Structures are given as C-alpha cells and as structure tokens.
Image (cartoon, rainbow, N blue to C red; front, top):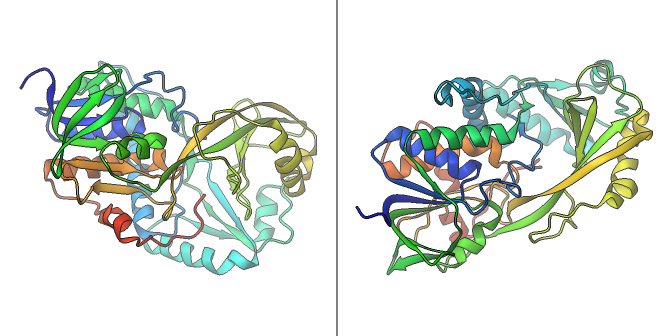
Length: 390
C-alpha cells in the first residue's frame, strides 16, 4: 500500500471523526485509517462550542438507547482513553436535566417518560410543587410540571474530543491537517479524496464526519444532504443572587435553557426560528438583553439583576428532514459513509455513532442496531418522528 493509499479516510477530526477512528482501530488495529482535519485547534468545532450536555430524555427509542450507551462509555472514559499513563479529565458532572412542560406538552412528556422508564432509565415526574421545593428560585406558575433525569449531566466537551483523538492516534490512526475539496468517485463508488494541497488519497471507504460542513463535502460527490449549518448562541451570566447549590440544565417549554457553571456563573441559550443559516460565529448581546433576559427573569425573578459576562456562537449541523442523525452508507455511492446531521446532539451520540459506523465498515455485528437512522430515508423522504428535540 503506497503512502497515498489507506483503508479508511475520515473527513473531519472532531468528536464524530475521532470516535469513529478510535472504534475502527479498536476493532482492527491493522487498518490504515487517515483522519483529515483542517483545524486541529478545533476553534470552530460544534463540540468545543457546545454546553457539553448528555441526557437520557428523548422520545425516540433508539435515541434513548444511544444515550444509555453514552452514559456507560462516559463512566469509564477516563480510564479507557488513558495513553502512556496520561488520563483525560472530562469533569463529568451528573447534575440532572429538568424538562419543564405546560398543559399542551404534558401528554407527550408523560408518553416519553413512560418509554424511558420501560427501557430502564432513571427518570422522574416532578410536580410544580416539587420543582419549587427543590429549586426555590424557580417560579413554575402556569406550568404542568416537568420530567427530571438525575443521571443527565454535563462534561468538558473538548476533553472528550481530545481523549478520543489521542487514543485513536495511539492505536495507529493518522491525523493530517488538510481540507477535503472533492470526494473522488469511480462509477457508483467513492474511491478517495482530493485535498486543498492538491494531493490525492485513495481508500476503500470514505466517511463524512464533517459536522456543519457535511453537506458541502457530500455535494462534491453529487450527494445532496438536508444538513444546514445553523448558528446557536450561548450567553454567560453572573447573577446578583446565587443559587444554593448547582442547578440542573433546565429547559422551558419555549426552548430556553440554562444551567449553573463553575465559578457561580449561569450558561444560557435558546434555539430560535430566526437563527441564521451559514458559517457565522458572531454573537449578539442584543438578543439576550431584549429577548432572553425577560423570559429568564420571569421564570427566575431573582435573575432580574445580572451581568452579561461573555458569549459565543457555534454551529448546529441541523438535519432539516427530521432533526436526527444520518448514519450509514449512502445507497447510491458505495464506500461513502455518513455520520451527519446530529442537530446539536453530536457530543452525546458520538460514542454509539462512531462504534456503529466502524461496525458497518468492519462487517461486525451491531450490539446496538441504529439502522433506523439509515440514509435511505433521505432519498425516500421518510422523516423519523420525535417530539421535544432541542
């Protein structure tokens, strides 16, 4: 095999690409795996710009099973990803997720809760009285209650990404700083890539893990994906009144969410219909001042006095068909695999997605069958149905 030939090319070395590389090498360390990442600082990676949440509370069975697997992985992650005695510190804090619902959302929330419990999840229904007792700063008037996942939590997303990357490299995966400008095809098969440097690499398998750039990458092979880069903003707040203890990630029916952060700060965000599509990383304090702060202060009156410390923007790779992952081989281009369209859930779904893609490539059985996310549904225009996605 010459230097420009390998077994698997992974486009994108973020959380999805590095997870896939790790599981491929873990399955077969004789594989020649090349990961192409244009920015190894990951300054614009969706994972590193996220709030680092992991939760069990979904309403689609397979998404719940994916989260259960992720929880198992995260519990052992630091030991499993140790390289030469160096152990990553992912700061995994299981402080809970609290999904608040109004009367209109109560029935769907109860149905999702029942499904989660049937799969063995530790989740609870909280009345407004219990919410107020547990978090006195909250003012849940007008709400019907909420579902609480005590094992949900948050972690250091950069540390998880770098943990996968370091372990994959230690097992033999090769990381190259370069950008893919074209997927090379021969008839109905992907055969390699052309790089911005002009170099060409060949491989039997090409995996699109390009995150928010996934559609642009796929388009070079004539594949149209319903994946758009949508700007999401996070705001960091220093409130005059501090909660006694940590607050869970709390999600209001409107989609506004917030949680405590180290140093007594509050992280807050909200996905909105007017969020722009495109590669825009600017953030707008006006949005917080005029729209989000009044909504926050209505639910937490004590937060009517605060300081906006800073903020940032990252990108969701939004699957506009149904908001769920696109996983598997593109049916009309053999050898071209997709791990795209996670719509803000990439960090928490990367372990299962990376393992599944590696199983498909290596021809191994699937302890967790994720074929429901197959790319065929894109061509067939058959969206999955799931409520409560944020």
